[in-house]
Amino acid sequence: MDKNKLEIYLKICENIKEYKNLEFECYNEDEEVFDSNLQCPLAYTTKGDNEEFEIQVTLDLNNNQIIKEISHVYINYKEYECFKDWEEIASKTLNFDDLIMTDMDIDDLLEEIPNKKGIKY
Image (cartoon, rainbow, N blue to C red; front, side, top):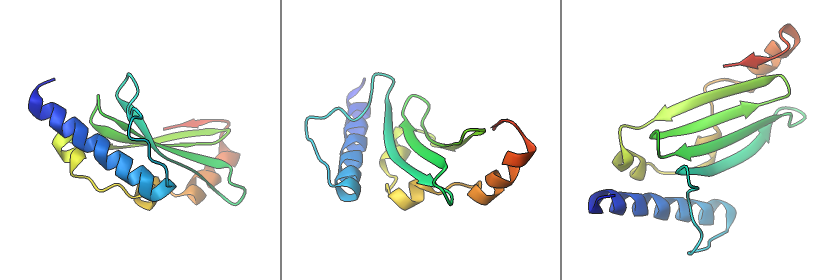
């Protein structure tokens, strides 16, 4: 990894640690931010009247994207926010509410459940 890319990587890690400290009040300076696949979970929540939908948001540096996955017993839906490079990722402001916001409305997904046994998008 060249020096410039390393600096950008460290900036991304710093941004994630700052975000996690603000959102979850957890900070461990020595903690590895990314796993061996250069992925980092950013947010997790549940939605729906009975909290039956899980939303997991992950930053994937290998593919320069944020993956938003909505899962349910019958549904697995993913959205991707793509970036041109790590510099663009480093400039992104991380906000929990923005991260868990998806283009697909939970109510629309609920309407699909009676019609299908399983949905994959």
